[in-house]
Length: 375
Image (cartoon, rainbow, N blue to C red; front, side, top):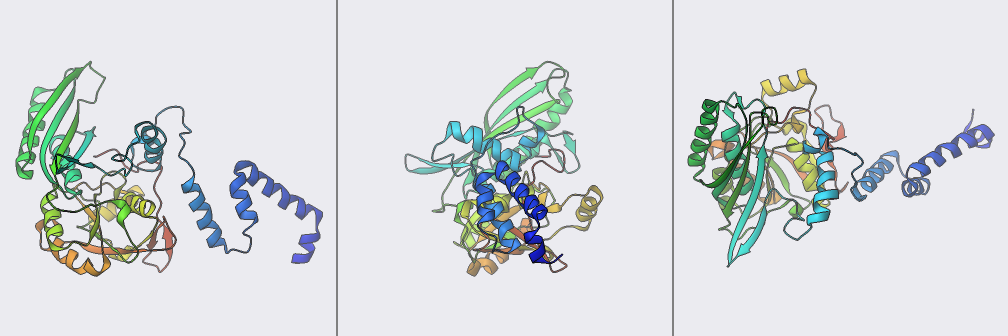
């Protein structure tokens, strides 16, 4: 059948009309865009569709909370924007950074909070205690602040072994001393057997900004470089020393993030959307240890989405990229740092991956978490 024959065929016209009607019923605004943009390439139409979907007002479609709402991906962002941000909206919260930065009597402070519901409580290389301290210290440090004080709230299940609690508290104390912070206040609650998974910990942290810096996802600009402090998929320790070395070396740092829930991919999506830019990363440049890559392949997951507490993601002015890389590599926690990509203008709000096979694919946020919660 020739194109002209198809155009004059009543059945073909009917099928085309039906398809368009269905699209319009699902999303009238999107259907009008598609019908008026038939001259665009299929790639452009896909990008327009993604852009319009992302600009829609966030709405929660589920009637009950699911595990996906705590994964750090799309479901988490929808929950935060459609519920919490709508109710609590204020200028300090709206940036949706890992901490709030504000001034008190002329001093700039950073405040953060986090809760840890790790299972198992003890794992190779650490436990819920040092993770709680390190994670909170890191969220303060990536604002450019010097971490000073922490709170610690414990929710303990009836029957939890005192010796296990002692191990957790001991590791928290050691981590706090290593990070040069003090745990200055806290709270303890005990719930009935079966009402908690042994031990949950909530921490809050306060730090002081001694530098005249304002870091955030909204600061990225075309021409900036994207760096990571080492192989992704690995859990590290507190990174405030590494952050200090980086900020001492260059004033070109735009944004710093600790790659926790959702991994590097989610952080880059947050930056791209907040700054309305594109981020293009090179798959061959992303450092991944052989054992992490192997485990990811077995589990069928992408290392870009794996949480790696203590792994710093940095967006820096392109002209300062080499200086930033050298500063990272000069610190023990950044010896394997790498430049993994660039910030560009188009297509705005998207993260693209140049694959090792020469192609390009979109790296979007996941709906849920590919692995159980580890931070």
